[in-house]
Amino acid sequence: MSSKQDQQIAVVGMAVRFPEAPTLDAYWANLIAGRCSVQRFSKEAAIADGVPRSEAERDDYVPASALVDGVDRFDAGFFGFSRREAEVMDPQYRLFLETGWAALEAAGQTGRRRSDSIGVFATSGMSLYSGKEMNTYYRVNVAHHEELLDTIDAIQIKVLNDKDYLPTQLSYRLNLKGPSMAVQTACSSALVALQLAVQSLRRGECDVALVGASAIHAPRHAGYRYSEGSIYSSQGVCRPFEQHAAGIVGGNGVGVVVLRRRDCALRDNDRVHALIQGIAVNNDGANKVSYAAPSIEGQKANIRAALRDAGISAALIGMVEAHGTGTAMGDPIEVAALAQVFGEAKMAPASCAIGSVKSNIGHLDTAAGMASLVKAILAVEHAVIPPTAGFVAPNPLLNLARTPFYVNAQAQEWPAADGPRRALVCATGAGGTNAHVVLASCTGQDGVPAAPRGKGGEAQEAQEAQGADDAVRLLPLSAKDEASLRAQARQYAALLRMDTASLRDICYTAATRREHFRWRLAAVGQSRRQLAEALDAIADG
Image 1 (cartoon, rainbow, N blue to C red):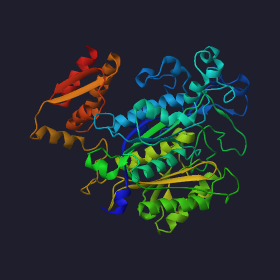
Image 2: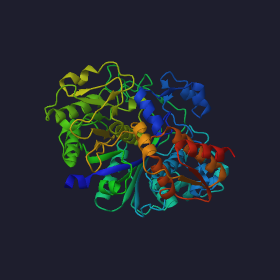
Image 3: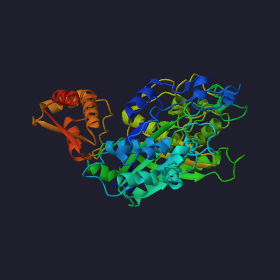
Image 4: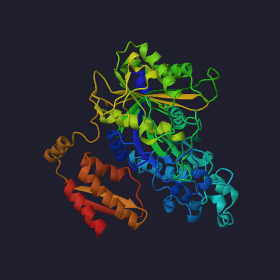
């Protein structure tokens, strides 16, 4: 194994709560369909949520955002919080804790084989929930309920709202003993957190790393004021690289990925969604027109550093998931930096797709890089490049015809050529911190590309049916209460009817890589259908 392979990090689990996408499957379906999940809501809805009427009725007020459902709900008992603590907790915390647990479960890191050293590297947006000074609009936040302040002290409010405590809350609640730290670099925070996690794994500081980003804004139905020359769109939609691009629109979301060293993941037969081959972080310094402006030189240097860390040429990149704000300054600078680096590889015109998930779900603030990362991971895994939503014609200022890039308007197949599929993910924070990541599809130990999720199911089922093993399968499930257990039985029944994962793997993972709680059940059967029917009977019994 080469030294570069030794440095590769496997993505072994993911979970998301994105606009109109409470699951990975829903997120991927929306991406493939080119769906824009930004909603325009009435000014009455904004007023009802706490926006002052004088604000909502302004002529320059744009009532648009990409919303996440369930921000008012939380399984407090599961994590050991009281109802009162849950009420004063920032929704960013609530969804992050639930999504973090879901990601660890997806990675098989909550059962008996769970590593003792799991690090947490996380970011969140400014808390708009805890005080009047932070948010004068939100009438239902903590500071507007004096009865809450009489029953819980200021320190407790702080540790349930301030972003410094987000990762350590998860570490404490789930007994995770690796490094645990908050990361804040504005819009590039998620990918900077990823870089710290990768370095921690490479140095052996932890065996597993959880990287998460949470951006849930309050009030929920809140738009923004538009002013000429600002980064916000007058149209209430974000159109990266498009001829009618006019800026960003805000969004909400939470995403978490779980990482392990490549050799450990392959040894333990983890499901590997993608490999992180290279990653780099830098800052523009003062070589730009203003503090918040992007820099061609800074981005160029960091792209080169990420490719160098991966040990590859830009010519091997088939997709760029760009920062892509759709602003008059940001897009031309980003494309110019990319074009100069990729141009050094003598790439042919229109040989590399470029896009941005902001066209689908808006700009997710500190979670923007996480949305981009998960999109790119799914793309290399499924072997499909998603379209850029709403794209018709390119912004002429980008001069795309003179670059290796094209913006695809339809989903397209992405076959592997002589090696794995590779993508570059980009994020830039206001203040100049750039982060770039090189992803690759996993080819396993034998050089055979891993089958994309959702493909190859018929062959796999036939192999299982014709195999020497006709054993009866035992599928054990557990939860902390009866209602949750019945709900879980229904979820597994649905999974068995649609998923293409090995039946043997599903039962093995449920038995050995899931934590076992007080309420338990076990379904028995020789096929997916038998197990699903048994679970339905238990759920409805």
